[in-house]
Image (cartoon, rainbow, N blue to C red; front, side, top):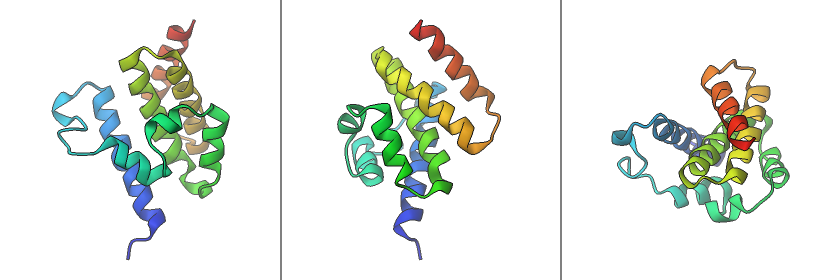
Length: 130
């Protein structure tokens, strides 16, 4: 039997993978073609839509993540990094890119994984924010 936490974690991983494919510019694997409703996924995961979560400060979003189980934090941070990175690049929004950098850094810290693509994105964001 799947619990709510397992279901939410599955949604997070699904959204993370879809965003990763969009970031890598593989249009045949886009969110729309996978029939993922972006806003409904955000509501399922966070109980609020993207507009509302993106209006929150980094600290407020981190607090939302901290309310979840600690073992799941890395998944949240990776998903949030991808989410704000993709959206920030699409809209040239430096606030979103700054949030992406923060969440990617938290992902690296909490996961203990050496992820070169994430490190490269952080460096790309730093240059864009200069």
